[in-house]
Every structure is written in C-alpha cells, then in structure tokens.
Length: 352
Image (cartoon, rainbow, N blue to C red; front, side):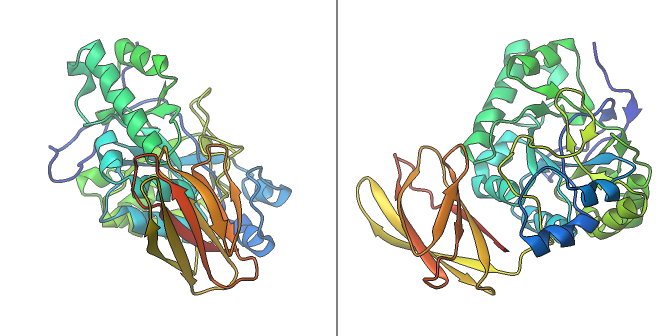
C-alpha cells in the first residue's frame, strides 16, 4: 500500500476547490537542455540521447520538472514557450477533461518536446471512488490524451497525491505507474515566484518537483530555475516509468519529438482549402524565418494523403508530420483524409 506523507497540494482552476495533496516517491520523464541547448540549436541536432557535452553539463544528475492540471487555453502556450526558450523539457500531467476540451494544446505540448502524463479525468479524490470508477477516470484520460496527439501515457499522478493499493492496481492494469513528487513548489498555495525558485533549489538527482500549468508566478520562475539547475550541474530529465526517478532523456513517451532548441522565432498561419465529402485541403504560411521546421499534428483517424511545397517526414503514429522547406517558398499544403474528424491540424514552428 502506497500513501503519500508530505503535506502539499494544488489550487486548480476556479471551478475546483482548494487542494491539499501529499507527496511520495517520483516517476516520470523529462529532458534537459541548458548549455547543450545552444549546441543543439547550432547543429540542428534532434537526437534524444545526450551528447558528451550535455553529459558534462549534467554532471550532478537529472531532476523532473512537472506541471499538473493542463492544458489550459490561458496559460499552456506561454508555459511551453517559456520552457523552450530556457532549454527545458518537462512532464505535463493533464486532466482528461482539459485534454478533451483542448486537443490542440495537447499536440502543442508534444510538439514543444514535453512528455504527457495522466492526472485523472475530473480531478476527484480518487480514494472515494469504487474500483470501477477509478478505472474509468484513468481510461477516459488515456483516450483523451491519445486523441489529442499526446501518445499513450505511461505515468499517472493521482490528484492531491492520494493513492492506495486499489488505485495503483487500476493504474497498473492500464500500463500506468503511479508517481507523486519529492518537492512541492506550493504554487497552488499562493507561493511567490521567489519561493517557487527556492523550492526548485532543493531538488537533488532523481527527484521531482510539483508545479502547475495555470499560475503566472510558476511560469515567471522558469528562467531562474533553469539558471539554478545549470549552476548546480543538474539538468531537467525525464521520469523513468520503471524506477520512478528523473533520468537522462533517452526516448520516453514521445520518443520522436526533438528536444527544444532554445525557442522558435517563426510563426504559422493555417488557411482552410477545398473540401470534399471524404477529405479537405489546408495550407500553412510560415513567417519570421525561411529556415523553418513546422510540426503538423492530426487528430485520429485523420491521415495526410498528399503534400506539396515542403519536404515531410512522419512519426511512428502517422499523426505527426514534420515539414521543412524544399525550395518552393514559405507556404506549403496538404490533403487530409478526415475519416469523420473535420478538426483542423494543430501547428507549431521552430527554426532549424
């Protein structure tokens, strides 16, 4: 039986009551880029295995930066941009209801190089539920995240950190390892940016810190957290689903996503095109750079059946297409066989 012991919690959106979770042993994945970010950006590298230079920058190990309760329309994009511009990857513990309501933001999390975990569907006190209700909360969240292009999570953070053997059994049945945290930032409890930075300074090799998607103070702390980790020879890593510790990134739940390269300086504009009963066209115009990489994330069961004016490649799911210039300018297009899902794809852009 596993039950957390340290005090802590989180205050989600206004629709939720104040929270008071508890902590315990960690488990998720995250990557790292501090000094190595500039190196990767310059070389255009996308390999997930840390180089010798990155390993030297991470001489004292890896920690896990985790953000709960997303994705949220008002804050998630800013959070992702700030993490990328500071060379960090993090784990996003999404609630299923937020993932279902904002599938494009789930795709943006993946495109930004983050890992996605399960945080239940409605954020209830899970220990008050029956075993069947527990399973429903978890399985519906798996589906919502997968439908948003977030892959199939392998880690689960129970709301409020509350867990027991019954809940862990329900999670294990879905291939999920239960993860809590070692350090609570107290951002849910009104902690200042300085206090959040101070909390992150207590992290040691393998540990995780609890933060949330929806607080301005938390986002404002990121540059100082990045600097503090770098100064201490620590890097932001992923969480191993087998050990529950933060480790050097080497794949994870989104193994095909390239690590951040210090932020993006290009923009995308999507224009709907011709439509037919079974398919539709779309075009993307890229601004701000002629040396761009655009990630196009579809919604299952959609499938791209034709492209033009770009060189493209695919991830293993067939739902994430990466487009690069092929000498035909900064506008490219594609035809999507929609399979009943007319949702336009989500886009993210970075410089190569």
